[in-house]
Length: 169
Image 1 (tube, helix red, strand yellow):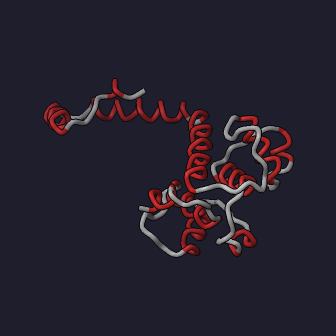
Image 2 (cartoon, one colour; image 1 turned 60 degrees about the vertical axis):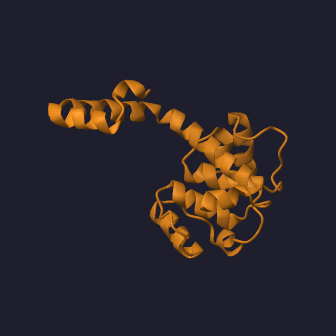
Image 3 (cartoon, one colour; image 1 turned 90 degrees about the horizontal axis):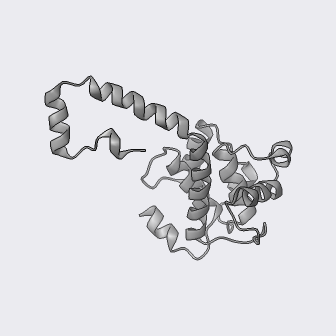
């Protein structure tokens, strides 16, 4: 329900970005107060600046959203982004370089809910490309565990429709 409502919002807010990020990082999916979402992110090592939390109802801009998502998801970026890690301008420029946002956006440009979710998804995809090796090793170890299961259990899994490893990359 949260994502469906967000996709239809004409203007996303800072609160929407914090809630979406919290849910992506494993926070509770049910609706809770904004401060609880911010505390959850802090427990995961994502510090949202207090000034930003106080402006939770303000429209979400390209600069704020790109900076928040890239920093929270650990996208390292290039030299200038690393040299000025708390700068929205360099976060947005790095996002342009990585192809996350088009080159014609500007920092104060507001986002609707659908655009905000698209931005979050693109940053997650960039991050996951770098973690692909970890994912593949996890799949391999799952295969070893699965191969050690008794034959009856394997037949039960097939009846339930659980895919074999060949279906995964």
